[in-house]
Image (tube, rainbow, N blue to C red; front, side, top):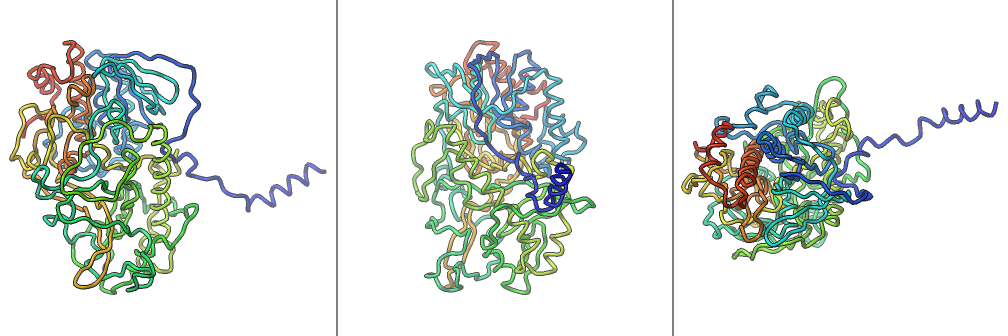
Length: 561
């Protein structure tokens, strides 16, 4: 009888028990207890599960090398399997090699599913005989002179390899190896870049700028003493052309659906509607405003966010980009200063890797809360116009994707991290084909593209208002070659490392190069270069460039327009 009573009591209380957290497996980093010390040996160690890492690992394995491929998390494919499937192509004819094979096998170059992308990447890695080691987070690097001897993971494993590839979105391996780098934006004068530095005016001047409306940035409209609304920076904005340490905004490339079975946008833990007060003010500022739920450049229109079946991106003045929330992500540091002369490059780790991962985990979860909260606000808050709210509620999370992480993308879109400084820096002149190279490893063709880097108070037409800064989209006249020299460090800093993702480029040029197909192209080329360096027993800087070109052409890599 007592057992029956206990069962009835449990059933009565069942409806009020807290539901399981669908996002319990959604994280950037979780510390692990190191296992026994273990030595792993291989020819090529590839660190970073991005498309660049996939390309490097497959190519080197095809050339007979023993490859170990280390993924930071439980997935491979980076953003391509993490939600960015409305692929930023540029010009299709510039895509060759493994990248072209990947898109051919998946059946389309845009709008495939993230789960299909990951499945295909895993299949291609298995076909090449590449061993993938998941949830391996770099802890330290050991060097002898300018050569990496080994890299130790937080699991207690130490990998010894002849050549290493840093295929992370942040450049963690090369920073741990003491290679020079920059974070942020160079002054426009550094490389004579017309779209360089802050407050450039050649492109996107009126896009996602609150429709140039005089929206007050203060809690009490017009009263500076009342303080700023949330999500507006109090940092002083720089002058046109000045550099800074700010990083273009990150977001999650969420995968949405308006089909039966869609999952309504959930209310995140700790939700606070006041975080979106600026958006609420914008939504109700002028009755002539038109909301597109898509990209728009027309006057008096705004997103405020893209909602479509599939990959849905930032698309508005106050949107899914968490402007200013990511500046410490690349290396753990940030100073809110501007400068007219480029400071010296950085070397080393200002924050230990394990501490940096903990910091990034906090930033990651803050981005989750911000973006989920934004969706919940648009779907439920009384400040949102009813017609817009109704349209938003037609969409939800896609139940077929990201099943392990509550149907939310597992990968934060790290649009830019560290950028290596090598003997050759890709700049706007390369993108505009006024400066070319004779050591091409593949082509880029997407416009020079940056999302906003700051949201600040400005005075416009005599009124204090709020504006975003850093948004840029400036076309390249044609596909252009990427220099091999830009993916190898300075020889004196490291001679057995290739960096096909956080390559040596200005902020402007990186904005064009930083596309998923290009990362796979550069990764494959790095795999060829690593193999040639091993075969000839030379540094990666001293390989035979004619042989590199011949191998790349044999792999159907497109080298010149």
